[in-house]
Amino acid sequence: MPTKGTVFCGNGMKHILLIGTGGTIASEITETGLAPELTTEQLLSHIPSIRDICQADCVQLLNLDSTNMTPIHRQTIVRCLREHYWSYDGFVLTHGTDTMAYTAAALSYMVQNSPKPIILTGAQKPIGFDSTDSKENLMNAFRCATEDLPGISIVFDNKVILGTRAKKTRSKSFHAFSSINYPYLGVLRDGILLRYIRQECGSIPHFYEELDTKVSLVKLIPGMSREVLDFLFARNDALIIESFGVGGVPDTGDFYDCIREWKQKGKFVILTTQVENEGSDLGVYHVGHRLKNSLGVLEAYDMTTESVLAKMMWILGMTRDPETVARMFYTPVAQDILWPAGQIAHPLR
Ligand code: ASP
Image (tube, rainbow, N blue to C red; front, top):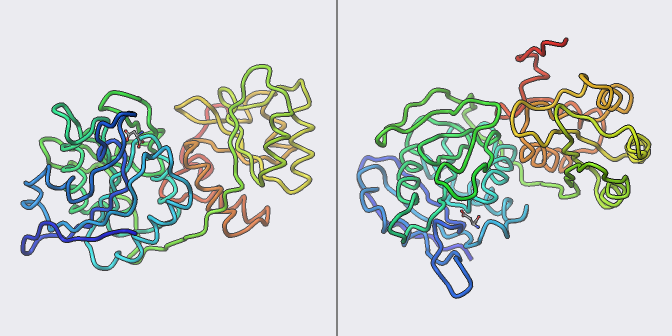
């Protein structure tokens, strides 16, 4: 059961809700390694100067290592945001770093057009350690939650990253997240936000609670056989294939037959790349061209894999009509995809 409490109150300040979900930031040393144990009240007690920035309330929604987060937990977060949306000026969500980019992507589809900031943060070292990034990240997240920074973003290591563009790219250092194929929304210098980009938003957010989990992801490896794909297609309605380079699948080993057969059975196939930056372009090589032009797979272009996964779960939560799925997939949401809109021209075209 989530618990809620008012911890710090100042007058005439923005009212921010801290939603705790666990992660390293809230972890303590146990006999079996770090585990989330601190409450949101305890987190706030480490940053007493928060009272100079805003009025903070807190909700202890979950207390998990984010490795254990599932789509059901993301739905719980969305319900919490929806329930409290009109009572606060902004939101800070503390979360484990390991799957924070997946949650940021999911929230970007499930809470669209939010005029208020919804900031995810966490840390690589627990807040109780002598050397920690927790306090700076948490203070910065609160600072950003009081600013005109609409929509979902991650605030980490003095950077503000759009929710659809974040990826954990370092497992240990404080500079844990990168913004993929998109600039930072802003940076913090000495606790001051320098905002470079303001997301477009509406005056009322759209909340979506449905996520369909029959979406899977496979990373192509040299020599993989079609049986791996068959196994995943049989158990899911959409399969994201992380292929090599700008994209393609081997033209040996029945991959094309496999994709054609499962597409005829109504499955959705999305091709993306396992290369972190610059995205896919299936039309460039023979091994990719046919997938796009005669097999009709969807292409991720410059989207992150985290966003492709979340977007497909969000879309299949509403429809399985192939034309509608394709239209929704290529329609940008929170700047998740730029190429099909023709905003970046490919030199070979
Ligand atoms: N395993 C932790 C988590 O994701 C790592 C972290 O928070 O940095 O919950």
